[in-house]
Image (tube, rainbow, N blue to C red):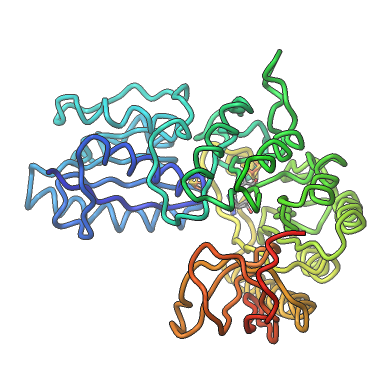
Length: 443
Ligand code: SAH
Ligand code: SF4
Ligand code: F3S
């Protein structure tokens, strides 16, 4: 049996595409290999969101070059967003790469493998089927990702994603529900709907297929056996009243929204082409909190965008404290080729200033999150057990409906919903002990 080794970089979309690649390869008779050195087929699923992503991948690709020198029969396949961005040069710049395919071509991996493998394979298209229609190998039996759309129609000036993932396309509601139904029959209790801009779902669907994101939330929540529904990532501009109502009214839709702000400065937001300003973002936060009191909000923030002044950076810090996020992903701006900011704006915030700003932002996020997460201390949270805690295997770990990791003392196994009395909070996790009450799955 030939063996494959797969390395994944980047976001959940890529992690999910990798599940599909595994499913596809295993259905073709490949067995997984733990070591790249032992693999007949070396696959990379790449990311190119920031320069640092490219650099990390280059290190790995260097190792593939070494392996290929030692074992010329090994096949090197590079998929994902970096591959798409390098489609014109990948085979000349990296002659040891046998196969390259973009994120819209996961379904064609088998076909590429079948071809004479020394010939470079071209034919990049973004018109592949949804990878969600391919066989899959899930990491966790009780949790699953579900692709609801591909691509992104936004034009955020810093972002390379639209260039590598193409225009937005929604998957038919019936297809999504059919996949979730099959997953539920296979033991899945929690689904995370995935897309670059999940909540603009359905705008490209016509006729009988026409459906909104809120309708999709309701339909997926209605699938027998599904206890929790999450999604990643929404765009603040597309959070409408019906989505907030879904969080309020549909028991399965969890009390967490990842609401990428990117900046707290209206001037910077405009240059980023985010289409909202600070006040509109804060007004949205208020509407969400009114509709769903206690809901967890998390965010993404970029520091050092072209022209960002000290005062504008301070506005990002004050946004964090004003909103009171449960957590935030923080990024240093990285100039990307082909993007509006990359081509037309000078990357003029000096590196040491970027480092200082990200450091201060991280400190503010941690302090805010610790304070905010401590609101749960003394309450009983419903936790979906994932298994023994990594840091202390005598304890269990799982997530609350608010999407916070909890480690706790108690008994139980993966896939159980258990009540946990929260007794401590850090900036990223909660701790507790199992409460006495019998498992209250849902009222
Ligand atoms: N579609 C998702 C994810 C986009 S990529 C969304 O819109 O939320 C994830 C995050 O990477 C973005 O939210 C942004 O904060 C960050 N990011 C994107 N391009 C970047 C760049 N050029 N430099 C630094 N961070 C970037
Ligand atoms: Fe990039 Fe903006 Fe699209 Fe997100 S919404 S993927 S940040 S262009
Ligand atoms: Fe990276 Fe592509 Fe995701 S660039 S962040 S893997 S969409």
